[in-house]
Image (tube, rainbow, N blue to C red):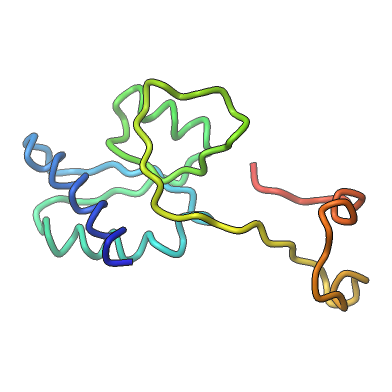
Length: 128
């Protein structure tokens, strides 16, 4: 966690060195949830005069915000099958394992594991 927070501080320092006092960060709270509080806390400690403004935008809005300069950095999921984003630089901070959540009365709730084939036959609610 400290190493990940340190990476965020380095990015923020680069913005602060450029003379900016506000750091605009795009963050999808679900994937960034485990690391975001530590990164923000470390940035605030290291750069007390820089105001961090978080933006909870969709993936496409976040990428557009980076390209248009409305965001200086962002925490996004890098989708393996998406077209390459050559104009942006990525650094992997965290690998997440997909999780399947079901109601307690669902038949999968009694299983220790669920195969992808079984899960594929179920209706899903997913994040956009």
